[in-house]
Image (cartoon, rainbow, N blue to C red):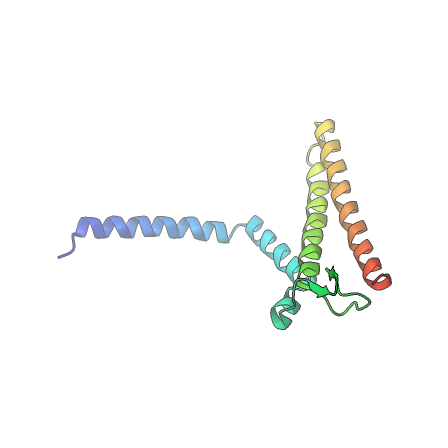
Length: 139
């Protein structure tokens, strides 16, 4: 026979955990991170990776190709992962720029956050453009 005290204690702790999990799932920050993560996944070619199952690298004679040359509509797995990381870096830069506006009373911290955000965003933009340029012009 089950001890009723243990059963009620289990039910109480389960309700407590359920409330903690539901409060996390309903938080605006969690929803924001989830939406941004899904957007980065979709824009980075995640669906293409799932459907086509591309290889990561292609051995070609004495060299290894890490990107699919001359075709913008074809990609290797590592290209997709790098682009997703760069998109996430750009989004984090935009987030740092946004957060810097909250530190008006401490200009030093606002300037550091603004500079870091601009740096992240510019690095992300330049690297994505460079990857597209290399992909289209070099073999």
